[in-house]
Amino acid sequence: MNRNTAFSFLSDEVKNQKSILTVSEITGKIRNSLEQGFSHVWIAGEVSNLKKPSSGHLYLTLKDENSQIQAVIFKSAANWIRFDLKDGIEVLVFGSVTVYEPRGQYQIIIEYIEPRGFGALQQAFLKLKERLGKEGLFDPDHKKPIPLLPKKIAIVTSLTGAAIRDILNVINRRFARVEILIYPVRVQGEGAAQEIAAAIADLNTLADIDVMIVGRGGGSLEDLWAFNEEVVARSIYASKIPVISAVGHEIDVTISDLVADKRALTPTEAGELVVPRYDQLKDLLVKIKARLIQSLYTKIKTSRTTLLRVEHSFPFKKPFDRIHRVQQILDEKMQRLNLLCSHIVRLEKERLTGFANRLESVSPLKVLKRGYSITTALHDDIPIKSSKELSFGTKVKTRLSEGSFISSVIEIAE
Image (cartoon, rainbow, N blue to C red; front, side):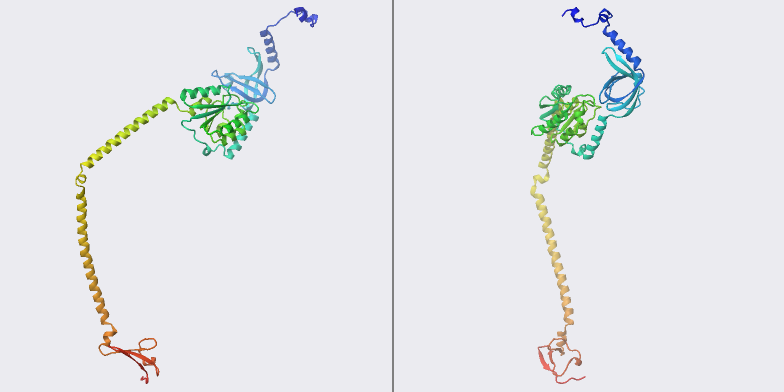
């Protein structure tokens, strides 16, 4: 197709117009048009992809359900912001729409910004956080300790992201003598949360996994949202394997971070938390070995000194001398005990003799020996003290000094 054929569909008027614009010229015209038509406008939207470089300027995306626009807040305006500007919050901004010519991209230069409320994702995050917190999924008592020196580590993340490279580099640098199992999953987009949850469940069916790292690199709130899904939170909570959550950057806090047994601020820190440094561990073991050897040497030296002292002690030279002294003491105590027992027996015997003499002196039998007698009723053997207790024909028993007799009453005298 030649040039004449290519332009054959154009009108003669257009063909005769030879004004040709460069990219810069057309971009400049678009910029002038935007700045004239959209100068000093108010826009409401949700903050996303907030970036804070060292220059002091702020770069972000304003979005709603259907569209988005890039925005910039220069340092002079950013210094007047009096609230915590972060992803997910609804804001109301005032500024002018223009074109960033190097990229041919339209944007709004924000001169004033104020909070309007939380975005839908942020509200969902807070709602789920509150509900799972009440259920106890963040309870510190449920968190499992991370093993000091794992033999096998599982990593659940994307194979294409920077997170896996950072984790592997740190682990290989710190402790290369460890087995690593990588379970690749999608970490953002539809279905990512289900893949992550399924990976955690699958790894729990293996018996040789000591610890698990679940995470991804940084991104916007939308990019990290898979780690704010309830299905991922519950799979981490149900995991028997200790889980380290490594999602985004230090400022990014997800539901997975709160449920996990340990939170790493970044994927790089996850690699540092999961294994110790080999050289430091080796130095520590060398120092412990030296302390053990020194402790054993000191213990042996002390025991040797004690044994030598015992060997040259008097009891060790004459072991029976102490026994003989004890036997002598026992003999003396036995003699004293025998004397004391004899004395006590003699005193008690004298007391018993005195009691016997006193009983003898008041004994009725002794009275009978002097010619008296005792008369008792025959049926109950109770002494009769009065003639009123008798009746005609009553049989009585009379006890004499020697012997007794039974008689019957034939007469009663008052």
